[in-house]
Image (tube, rainbow, N blue to C red; front, side, top):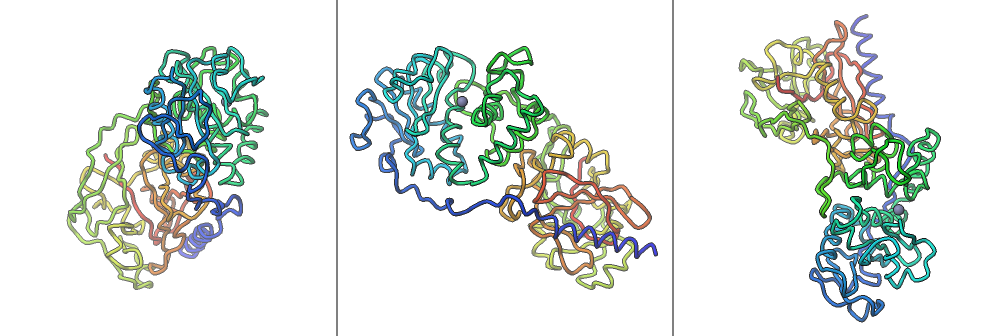
Length: 483
Ligand SMILES: [Zn+2]
């Protein structure tokens, strides 16, 4: 009966792998292939500051033009070249890996203007003449119908408020000219997160409570660590005390997850304002570690811990004895109650990519399958990791690779931790692999029962990191953690 119970649970586990694909959002690819071969500025690129080409038909007020990204930055004779260069660098940073957004913006004709000062000074831009929206407190603006964003040189060169206004405005431009065309659900998801935050009473007395547009732009400014910090926490009308990614996650996980879905996770924002970053931990791990077979693994430091950045692939225990490999004999695999391992599709040439799978008997064997000085993580080790990544409901976003091997909609995946979990599935019969593309599962070293071990699962449909159990004869991938 014991083995029956174990097998039936394993069946459920695998069923879950294949059925937990959500019917919800699906990326629409129709706009991904815009090739940026149209639009007002697309022919007129320059990575040095030049006079505006006559063909782009700008006001004669503008004397400077820099278009190194596809989205030109312009200014009058009074604007320092440095301000244009900083803004161009910011734009390139924001569009890193976002060619579909960038190309849509090029096609739309997005551009960015710099005025000497903020507030009423923004009115110097001829496009803003007569604008009723500018007052002494406005740090920048986007006019959707003109596809222009405007910010000021004093702010860009850090002579004004310590808030990256140009980045904030550029997020508006990305939203209005890029994201909403490329991703049909972008706005509905933003609105849903916004109304949820409203219902919870979040962001009172700040920009973010104004409307979903500001919710996105000011949220992304926080995400990149370049939002002004204000005390008290209650908000000063524009800002509050949330300035770091970890604080955003703790305060408004819906906004965090929305941003994590659409914006990259890099932290090297160019410009005069150094981003406020979360501590990256102090584990100071060696970059690689070698197992008994001589396989070298990349190591990632996550907070206080050192983890293998790839799946284990050793064929021997630490003492040099071989781990049994049934080589595709399913009966052998399923009846084995000592340690066993297997290559993906029983093909050792896959090991370097996917790693090997191990049954739980190999995991619990005191001869240890991990490199010397390392072990299979127990419940506590995993708990420390998940907590460092924001907790169970969101941790897998930081753990899942952004590789296209993960089937859409690889929810929330940012791999911000560097853990780089890949969706290589699992095997129950030692022959077929299930869940390839939708799930990653790793053993936890703690036994659940005489026939079951504990494991952790990540899915393409969720940001959760589930802890569950599975029959000991199942084959899962392993990550080791340093002692
Ligand atoms: Zn705004």
